Image 1: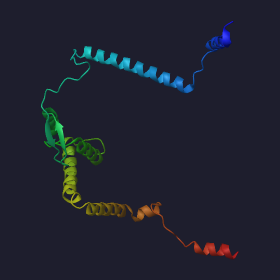
Image 2: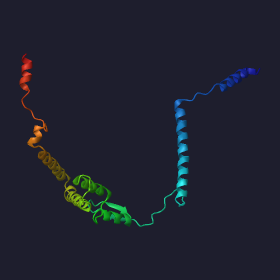
Image 3: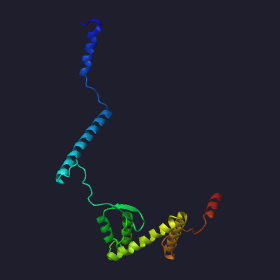
Image 4: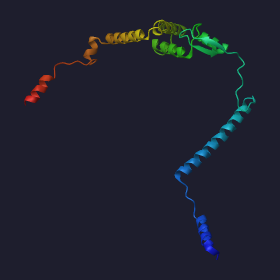
Length: 197
């Protein structure tokens, strides 16, 4: 036996090695997350290499090729927002919107207006787009003249328009169908009679 109790310490150390080490749930989740991240990186690298080979190998390790056309700044004719566009994109937009250059937001608004005016069928073709574009340009022009200079006035006019629409929809026929809430009699006599009894 070893002097000074070294034998007992060595035997205890051997006993500790034989017991399986407990892994906490947090440690296990961290290990799974690290493994998933590594697998994702390897998978995406493999996909980039396959895409590079399929596209004729533009090179650069998965980078996109440079745009060969020049970008130009184009201003939306409705709202005035600037965008960088290729000449081909500008040409396609002008063809679709009656020779006008409109940004993506205004294009969505014009399409929505065209759907609203003609029930989504689009039966009028170019005329539908032309009418919707004229309506949207009028709204944008009015906003640029009035709304930017005096936003409180613009908000007041919007509230007036909402009230006008609501007053038009409140016809006597709507009241017959329960379109609005009205009080037929006072509830105070019922409350007073409960207090007396």
